[in-house]
Length: 92
Image (cartoon, rainbow, N blue to C red):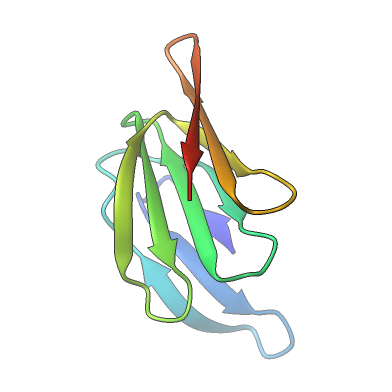
């Protein structure tokens, strides 16, 4: 997967080079992308100050959280987001 200045996150099949899914919704460029350890969820952080939590299989957005950067805990139970000098911890 990868984030972009065009406000999207695109998921690619690296073997074929085919785009599998596109995640949209950010109003500015995407600054971070993180997959949950089990691969079920994708968190994308944007310069718009929003972290979008999405279901990888369906592409459906599940939640919007505060912060421009996000990463999952090693066990996948929490998502940390950061922005404006504040780090927040969310239960997934």
